[in-house]
Length: 341
Ligand SMILES: [Mg+2]
Image (cartoon, rainbow, N blue to C red; front, top):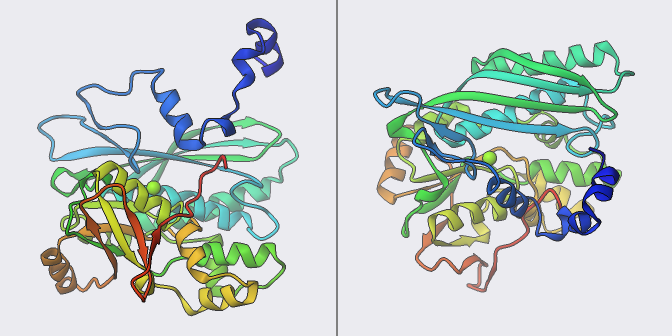
């Protein structure tokens, strides 16, 4: 039904509340998931983590993982500075990043495309070449999908994978005393976008981080057996750490001086007149991993040759997620990204 027909049939009241009025993306997901069955014995973890965790056979040693992500033209990418090959790489990498965050390995991909009739065939072929590049990198097979006509270009990727049961990493398992770590420098994608939007030319490093990022499947399988909680940074450090703290019912202290920033991100900050920390805290799409780990397991991680960056620690009180400055001054950590705000 069109919205106006629905209004006629149901009265305007039903349609009065808008998505933007109910508190954004996560509130909408809560409301919708109340309307359908989302739990049974085979759903180990359903809606609310980076991927769904499914029990396919109780005697199996692995869980099935499932995740999906949608890219809408001019919302998530623009042809002004992203070519189809970049969009293809990013579409796969952003999904693979969610599988990495669970401690798993991706295997099968389903791709659905909504395309305007006027789309160049070559554009779509180069999009698929980009997807193929990322799929080769991670051993992912294209197993199916759907195409349909639309006024807006939309790319929806669903990725299935698996994780050894003992290595599954959820958002809800952070413990007070855990160190909070990230796998790489933050804020490059957001810094590049801010520069592009304000007419500056980003460095090659920033541009690649924004247009065609790479997820951390290269090290996630070594981190997962040692970490307590894990998430990938897709919405910004503040928002994604918020998910871990909320689901684990813990708090956190982040030390602002320890948040790793690439020199190009610092330079972008001074060029556009912004504190570069803002890019790391509030900017999304870094696709690094954020995880919590005991100090003893962190030592084991170093022995495996994985260094990473310690940026804070998990605390007991769930009402405080603080950013601690050099002088000990505390402020609430904020600045995440919500798609409907
Ligand atoms: Mg994620």
